[in-house]
Image (tube, rainbow, N blue to C red; front, side, top):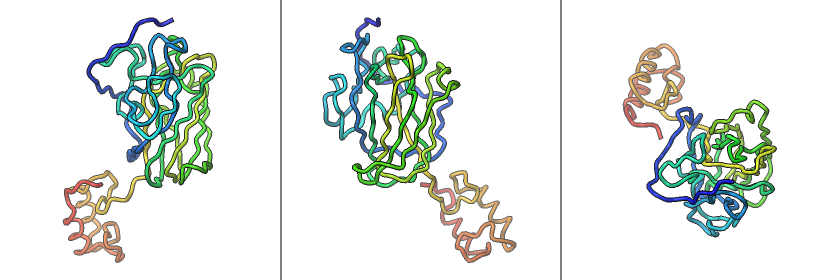
Length: 259
């Protein structure tokens, strides 16, 4: 049994080297979920969402948190050894739910989004009977009331046998304002730990970015000039060819970052 009390100090951002997002990041405006648990359910520390700024009591195990944001979207992830103190106290980065209590988390994005992925940062060390989720049942809604279009992710043996803390990336080709994620415990593990959840959306076209690298620069100018007067490879105005009008259009946005 883990016994030490938690302490508090300065927030330290810790990013995993392998955590690059696959698409365009998009952040929720709120999420709703039951608070994590802690010493009242056998933990050596309280694995609560201590940054949650909405309604509910984030010092009570399992209390419903709604209308705010917290540690799942703060950009901070925990390490393989979940007991590492990164500056805010032991296990501060992790929110944990105890066996028999499977969390459902609902994210509100404020508008309909064309999603690509959800990326859930887990701990799967088995140290202290801490593991990742086994299933993620995802459903989607435009109004927050009627959810459907479900997707079910099941972690296979290769995923479950990897003890590292990491993002589990799940493709979610859906359009919705709300995303609901129901998780259950890995078999044999008492605790289910998360430290971050993030999303990507389908990238919107960037006018003038002819090579799709997110920039409007010399490379795009080269692409346009190579097609100038020959074909539609640099056609920005939609008239079917690459000409002076397209060159002028590119120069108007040249060097301006894509949104």
